[in-house]
Length: 117
Image (cartoon, rainbow, N blue to C red; front, side):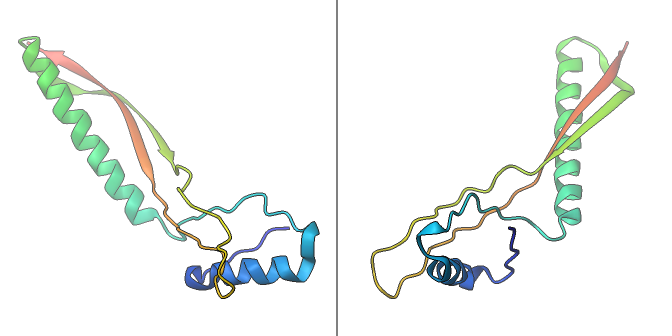
């Protein structure tokens, strides 16, 4: 069974309620956090990766006594690393399962530049 919760602040109480309703047979096999619309974040990460690749290529070309030439090829990998989280029941009677969400996107570019001169 899979459930989607959009109320992170109340998520721990929702998990606790489900566990209390089922009892000892409940097993939470994984909790993941995601970003509903990550287009803007991916675009920003892509731009940062591009700027980094270009700057490194320019430095390497300079170290080789040459100039950076045009791009020969580009390969992109978009990732969504697992979010770090803590899932532990607190001992206080009024406490719910704490959720510490965090999501990230990453863009890796492999760019082949030619050298000139």
